[in-house]
Image 1 (cartoon, rainbow, N blue to C red):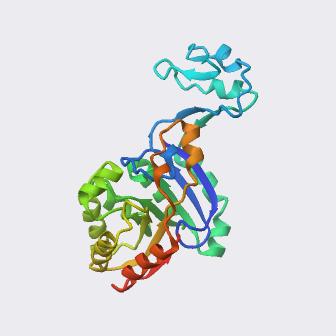
Image 2 (image 1 turned 90 degrees about the horizontal axis):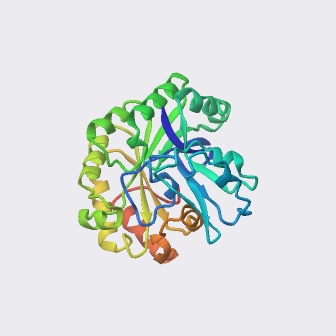
Length: 299
C-alpha cells in the first residue's frame, strides 16, 4: 500500500512521449518554491475550501468525533480527534471538503496505468513516478516499477535523490530513466532553501552515472536563490564531469501554485520570488552549454 495525491494522464513534460504521472505523497525537503505543496506531507490531508462553503453545518453535525466547529464563519478541525473517516466529504453538498491524498495498492494504480498502454506504444511514452518525493515510499515505488516492467511499460522516476544510496540504486534497477533535480551546488545554501544539505544528493547523482543509469537533470531556476553565475557555473562543471548526463532541463520558477498554498492554509514563502527574466534564462543555458551539455528550457 502507498499514498498518492494525483494521477495525471497525457503528461508531456515528465519524460519522453506521452506519459501518465503518478504523484506519491511525502517529501523530505521543504523547498521555498515548491509547486506541489500538497505532496509535502506523507499523510492524507483534509482541506476546507472557504470559497465553496455555504455554511450549512452538515459536516459539523455529521462528524461522529465532534472534530469540526465553525468559529466566526471559519471551519476549524481538531486534528487530534479527527480520524479521517472522510464522512465530512460525503456530507458536504457544496464539495467544500476535500481529501488531499488517498491510499492505494499496486493493482489500483496499475489499473489506471494500463488503460493508456496504447498511448505509450504510439508516442514512445510510459509512466513517471513523481511527488512529493517518490523515494520516501520505496517499497511501494519498487513494487509499482516491477509491475510496470512486467507490462513492458517505460518507467521514469522524478526525484531529488535525497535518500540512502541503497534505496536509490534499488529503484534504479527497476526503471529506465531518472529525472533528477539539482537545486543548488552550495550545501549550506541548499539547506537554507530546501531544509537539507546536498552532499548525499550529489553523491547519488554521481553514483547513478557511474553505474550507467540514464539521467536527465532538472534545474529549477529561482531568481535570488540559484540563478547567479557562480552557482550555474558550479552546476555546469559538476554535471560535465559525470558520464552519461542525457540532458539538462532548465525549469524557470512560476507562481502557478499560489492557489494551492491558500487552499491548504500554508505559508507561501515563494510569494517573494519573481519570474526569471528571459535574458537570465538564456545566460544560464549558455553557461551550461559551454561545457558541452545539452540544454532545454522547460521540461
